[in-house]
Image (cartoon, rainbow, N blue to C red):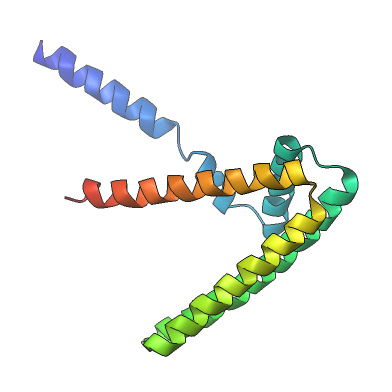
Length: 143
């Protein structure tokens, strides 16, 4: 009986391991252009975008990625020098992020019609909630 149980656990463990990386692992291995294409396709499907909207959103996503890359580079430099941001610097960074979010929201509002924009906002909130849940669950798993 014990051998049967051990074999069963082994089979389950091996099949789980054999499945390899999931969707998220594949996403990390893609180029920024491929990621943008997937995002635009998903948004097209979810929001029923026309070709003009697709082009405009693609440009917006590309500019966002460039800004994000610059920010990550600055953050990496700060980490390497073991320099910690002061409260003022953190507040300034947060203000800049909020500014960028407002600009992106305004651009999206100009690209999308009212129904599409409402749906996009709802999707953003859902993603935000999922991230909160993941963070909360991550802390519970380590205990």
